Image 1 (cartoon, helix red, strand yellow):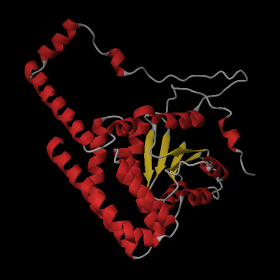
Image 2: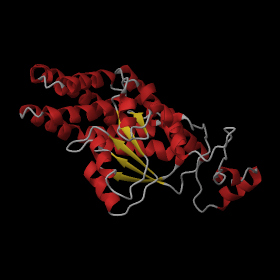
Image 3: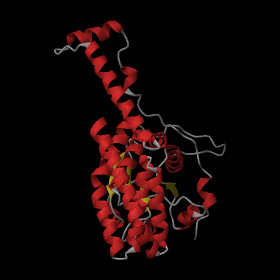
Image 4: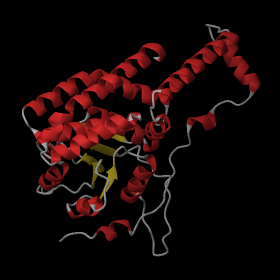
Length: 319
């Protein structure tokens, strides 16, 4: 029996106090950067235990091995076995009853209904946005609701900041008792230098048409941005070699998967124009339009080379 999409949202509760610290979430994605970014965003809000699988096959093996999860977040567009195909296999396992949410960059009309009909509880568009993530997490983990739509709220332990000393005298005692004293003026000067360097780095990126504001909204802060950027840069050459090989072999199915993943990464990093070019290649490869891919591949490579140089300069100057 196919589940109607409307039935999914009837019990939605806006509960910002859900405690997932004792829950385990499995993220399934063939893109390591997506795994890392997804985990960072989820951990920053809910702090659950996170496990990873880099393919549908690995996910199935984990379930068959008896691993228990409270939620599975699964990319749909994976090589060899898609998310939809993986869920179908999971549902053939007698004891499997874990809610599965689709992760997809195909946030177009009708996609939600498609995933609900395929058996997913919901879907989250990539790049993952915190507010959308919260809605889905609330849907899956909200506590019981009575007929009046009231809810039971579970509070986690108070954060450690509530127990920190707030008395100047006590703070001074702690400072005085440390064996290695530090020049406060020196620390302040260092912080100013670091802040200036970071500010200059942000200006550099914006001057090169990086949509940094959108990237920070997705990733949270500059530390996560820089970490994500390094990973992207370190793996870029091997990924370009891969799509070059797939193009040469006219393997448009896997070419589409690879440029789809690169498009998603570029959105996280604010590389808008490059993301748009990858999207064009994804759509054309899905149509098996090899003429377009061949005729426009050097334009793609030139844009990648431009961004490679920008990223390298940024890393050398500001990181």
